[in-house]
Length: 164
Image 1 (spheres, one colour):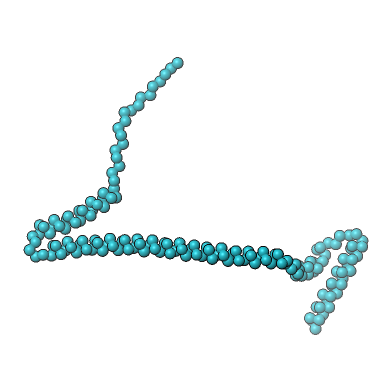
Image 2 (cartoon, rainbow, N blue to C red):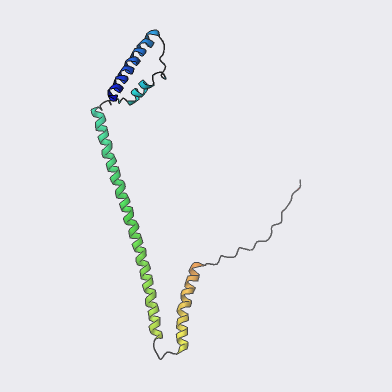
């Protein structure tokens, strides 16, 4: 019962609002929006029907969609190509590093094989061990630290004053 009475109450309010609007217009008075809050809320809840699109608008929208898809595909392909290039660079660096490590292992193994002969004296073993270590250290030091050239010696310049 309460629902029916609520509906009746709303219908009655609606009729009252319609009557007040027509009376206000006839009198030349502008209706106060705060008096009719329910009407304002009802206007907000109404849904406007959208104007249908024209054929040209539909075509333009379809064309925009297609170009968006093409651009997205092109961006994806460029990202994939960049990822492949980065992966290839990393693999190349990794292979170079692996080759360098393997060469180092081979050199160390050759030194150990040379030392492992039982008939070599202890002095020669020490020379070989120090030789390989010092050569690599020297190469690293030379590659890393180049001494800065000394600044050229300049004679102090004495200022000259000219009085007129």
